[in-house]
Image 1 (cartoon, rainbow, N blue to C red):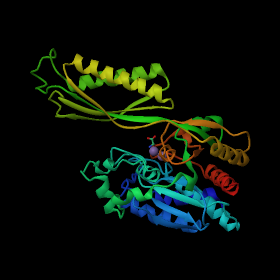
Image 2 (tube, rainbow, N blue to C red; image 1 turned 90 degrees about the vertical axis):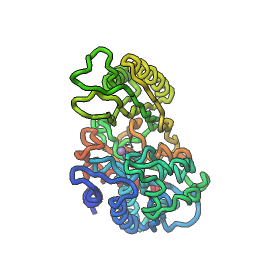
Image 3 (cartoon, rainbow, N blue to C red; image 1 turned 60 degrees about the vertical axis):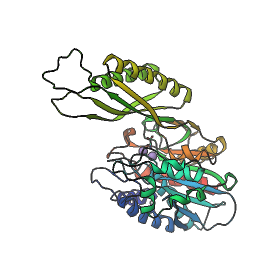
Image 4 (cartoon, helix red, strand yellow; image 1 turned 60 degrees about the horizontal axis):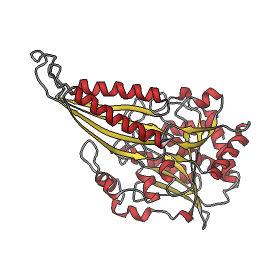
Length: 403
Ligand code: HGY
Ligand code: MN
Ligand code: MN
């Protein structure tokens, strides 16, 4: 079996579980999610796992091996709108293929294994993220279940409608002593491995992240009759802020600052904008640097709003701290990577957050990165070669056989 070709074929099939033809758009607790689980159940069964959907909508495939602390692998099934066909879902498939490969050779891991497909990691549908991993770690705030999507549907309603049981989430919490660790395979979503000419790398740590809901409020008026002097133009205040925070982050060099969503009202070509809502996302591997940039952003927003005579609200709506991977588990991944692709291995930090970020509250975590073309991700042209995925399957086989 060419495991890389098999991976490519299965990822191509599951990519059709999408609301869009251009790129993959698959939100949690949706029809596309349900269709994707049908594919993933098949992967798990072929890997010798017994699939079961849990109260949170996570699909868990359990190995037949009995008692004892369990090694958990997996990632998320959801995507960003018009995303790629590898982000998340490849990290569910490749461990299944490694287990299937072992099974065909008459081998199996020495420890109990689970592969999980978390419903939501991206935090695109709801203003929070990592729901499934947080449920396992026991860190999901029950109040978060009341958060709603753009249609006013709460997480609890969506989860229940999907066949989950939001009132049972507390039963999903694992005891640390029952979990050996969590290993997540994921595309790098950056250009480093490609630049190094390597297929695989070992992750040292995962950045911290925060999201801030910021609202500038001014006054609308006729675009033709209102003099420029004295306008309270909320969009001009927001634009001043956005260019300022971008400049600050470039100067600082380590913190990534991004405004990815913005809405304005009234939104007429001939009316002065009176309200602008945007989300500022800050990321850094060093939490102190991120928190310092948060303070600088808050001060800057105050200056930008005051300069235009506008009001301001600035609320941190989400944050997760940076995570260091567990040295021993990381060493196992590094050994598997070196044994598979040769060389001495290559370590790198993750600028993206992952399910492993939340799982680190439960157990030791480690990640294996796979090269992606041009470092492109969260785009339809996200791509990983058959050969690199075949190497990742071999590395996972090596990792699992060595436990
Ligand atoms: O946003 C992230 O870093 C991840 O892709 N959810
Ligand atoms: Mn991801
Ligand atoms: Mn992603």
